[in-house]
Amino acid sequence: MLNKDQIAHFDTFGFVFIRNLLSEPEINELSLYSQEIFDEHSRNTGEKYSQLQPFFELNSKMDKFVVDDRIFNSVNRLLGDDFLWVGSEGNITTKSEHGWHPDRTGNENQVNHRRLKVMFYLDQTTREKGCLRVIPGSHNYEMHRDIINGTDAPPDSGEDADYIYGVKGREFPAYFVESNPGDVLFFNQCLWHAVYNGFPGRRYLAMKFAAKPENDEQVESLNKYSLSMFSPHENYLNSDNLQIRSMVEPVLKL
Image: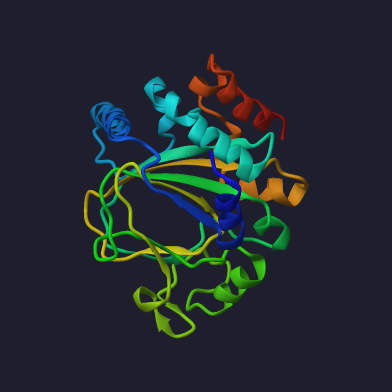
């Protein structure tokens, strides 16, 4: 579970990166179960996958990671009681870069609504080889909007930025989240982030959560960006695990 210094880091910078949160046997297990999901999808659909949503919901073997105290209790401390399950994804990247963008934006009320992504990289990433880059503090509304207004992408267009205030994306100052399997990143989805120097086959998984919305504007943002969360996967709706059901049942009442 995150300590007070780690929570303060998240509050200030919009992310907290925990090294070696999962042991080698655990990350090997997570990798194995993930590959089972990818392979089953491929067999059933004949599709070549790059991103699957939902993901963790598809295999009950993955439940242990969702409700693991190190994850679940940390999310609770970051989002407060009554936080919601938004969904999950599994990714095998095919492109070498993903320009600067936030996953979520909106007005001040919507940006201040905490939306959290918990990420697990199954392959090593470095500055020279596809690691995530983040702009610390860019989840805070004033800085968040300043960056939008300083990019070459139209405000609120949803397009990635190639330039920020005239600086080429790959040269823009950033924190490099160089990751090894077993490391876990907790980050606010309004944080600006990008990937450069990527490599085909880079695998990462994500769980997504949201604080309980406090008003209609925040629910509107959930509908805009995460509509599928309002139709939780049957495996979670019918789960025997009370922690899982505590995250999905309140969604049905929004």
